Length: 280
Image (tube, helix red, strand yellow):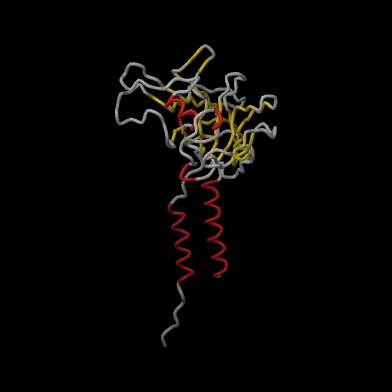
């Protein structure tokens, strides 16, 4: 009997632990393959293997790699930690230097205007659960975009306007996709930088992981991401079109109900109670 109860408890905990984390794309199930030689080290994957994308948990992340120019767009993943090097050579680092909660890996997106790549992702690749509601995800700036906005560079301006005279901004728009992978309606908008307020207590450029609620998108087959900026030139947006993402969480990935843990604890208590001999 004791053995049966132990197996039952193990099954309960393993099952509900699996359910609770099954659908979250943490990127921890991936291994970046290209070493990064800059400060902090780490590695990244940018699609140079020609696979056109990758799967994290149950989600397919699109990637376009051009072998002629050794360039990429769409999604990459990384664990590089360089928060100080400005410029294009540091494309794959989040300004946080790590993933959410100190994790290693995170996703990086580059939105290319040249090939109209808006960094899509599609649900249900393994499970077949193609239509899902999304709770949200964590977003932050890449080091490349952050330092470009903070200090300016040879192509993009230094962001300003905290005095209300020149309010700069950098915006991420997240669209839901239907079964034909077409946009379903209005996007969720998140400002990666926003100088439109002159509040001295506001962080004008995002430098940590911030939760973005995506529940308003409803049931979708995937997501599409787009970037826009106040810094626009003759050839389009001057701000580096990058952002980082971690812990993409479908609405089905909910915390384990407390009652389940109590059930397990109760069963453990039953096992631990020893039968006392009868007094005669």
